[in-house]
Length: 397
Ligand code: HEC
Ligand code: HEC
Ligand code: HEC
Ligand code: HEC
Ligand code: HEC
Image 1 (cartoon, rainbow, N blue to C red):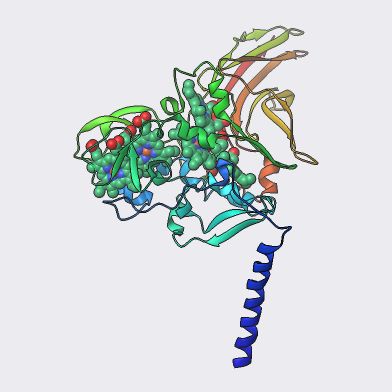
Image 2 (image 1 turned 90 degrees about the vertical axis):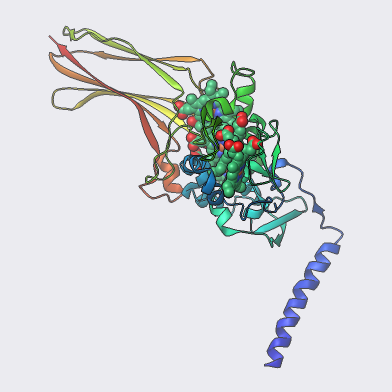
């Protein structure tokens, strides 16, 4: 028994010694973290007047904000199956979690630096303030509202039972952009490419409407029941509206305005049926799609005869094309700038008499089927939603 203990402690000492020599090895250097997304928001104390940092607790008083946030993608930023699948890959470095669970309190380890500056060799120590329930909440209320152990607001309210600090500059679009704009090649085959902030800054909405005006619509209501109606903001953070879970209904924003051309009801044999679909990025303050490079829109045109046999079909895609091996590289990009329009034409030469059906369907996609399969996502994981669906009956005489 004694002997066993002895060996264990020897092994333990060996580890300590190894680490010690490691640190003193003149060839090994611990590099400090430098990039904003390498660093978590430091551990927060619970603000005075509260007993937890959890969204659930904020929701006990701010019931509407909580119900809305629960439906947002932010609330799934950790539990999302795709995120979890990607996180498990060896190619995913430690800092993947810093925008998805931004508070140090949500993270199991504190990262103090990188051995030799290598992002795959973080120096980690266990975090005594780690709270697993907070982790499950992803980008929770405290992620955006708690800093320096106080709740940050924009009003300077004196009614709140919690310590409150007024800081409108902090709670501006700068907060959104701190996560929604990253453009870095991390390793040759891993690139982070979310440029929504830059797209907005260089577009026509800059100085007029920002992330908050479009994604957190204003509403007058009670912020806490019984405290009177005040200017407030919806907390759905509605985006593309492609749900993360088939069981959660997400609010949808549509950026695309669709203008279909008119079709005649009757055509003659040997006529060419010409159909034009014009789409405009009328409502998004950035490119469309934006953010994750895997997103895309498909416009599918299909013409069928009376027996439902497909006579001709064509698909037009709006999105980016990337090559990931041997090097992450954007190959092409036909995303729509704000207010940019695109015209798609579909022509069919009617060789026979009879009834035809033309269907035009626009879908927006989070990721394609191959990528979903590659990540082992089950078949219930929602990949796309339909935003336009028309069928035209045409008689060829
Ligand atoms: C015990 C109830 C209660 C809890 C729990 C609570 N709040 Fe509040 N909060 C209030 C009240 C009351 C106000 C003031 C409402 C008013 O003036 O209409 C308020 C105000 C606010 C404001 C606006 C402050 C300003 O001046 O702009 C923010 C932001 C806020 N709370 C966020 C949070 C967050 C985040 C949490 C959780 C970490 C939280 N609250 C937990 C009751 C609560
Ligand atoms: C701490 C980092 C962080 C901050 C701050 C942040 N976001 Fe996000 N946001 C994310 C992440 C991560 C996701 C994606 C989560 C996922 O897909 O699982 C996301 C998703 C979204 C989506 C949904 C996209 C979709 O359709 O799926 C919208 C819209 C959005 N954020 C808007 C905002 C706005 C507006 C702000 C500022 C008020 C903001 N975000 C602040 C990290 C952040
Ligand atoms: C992604 C960041 C983000 C998250 C997550 C978030 N908020 Fe907010 N919240 C904001 C911003 C930004 C504002 C200020 C908007 C303004 O005044 O321009 C705000 C405003 C508020 C206000 C002031 C009243 C109002 O509606 O404008 C309250 C209260 C509040 N949030 C509570 C919460 C609660 C509770 C949660 C979690 C259930 C939460 N917030 C989650 C960004 C966030
Ligand atoms: C003029 C309004 C407007 C402004 C300003 C705006 N957005 Fe959007 N945003 C939209 C609309 C509309 C969509 C829905 C696009 C779609 O899927 O059809 C959207 C979608 C998104 C998405 C989902 C990604 C996708 O491809 O659908 C994210 C993330 C997002 N916005 C973040 C932001 C951030 C961050 C800012 C500020 C830098 C911002 N937005 C500014 C209107 C706006
Ligand atoms: C700079 C902040 C940031 C970092 C670091 C970050 N993400 Fe994200 N992540 C985001 C934002 C913002 C979104 C939402 C983008 C959108 O929907 O437009 C997102 C969305 C996602 C999604 C969902 C994509 C979708 O279409 O719904 C996955 C999966 C993901 N990230 C994985 C990762 C992995 C893996 C890493 C590490 C390599 C990582 N993230 C690092 C900010 C970040």
